[in-house]
Image 1 (cartoon, rainbow, N blue to C red):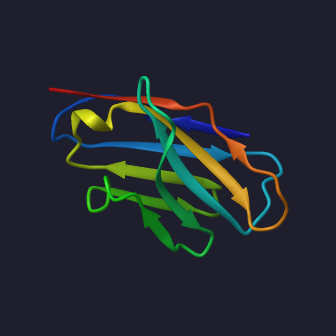
Image 2: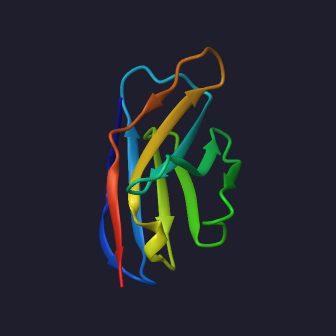
Length: 115
């Protein structure tokens, strides 16, 4: 199970952090990631991080967002800076073990950037 938290409303140019804690039997090593879905749009990739800490970002957030994780707490974080109105979306966390075919989604947390 993945439980996301930390969403909210922030003004343009502001910062906000979200986190996602995994519980239950989550296989390691794994990839944890953030996706987002804006109203009327498809879900899109935001950032990912491996168990060893290797990370990657969508071009639209590169340089503004930072993904990190605490393996001891099975938690992934997303620090969002210089937020723009187009960052408004429901943010979903995702976990996929390296082995097997299972993957898991969190319930989503809403981030609203207002001008």
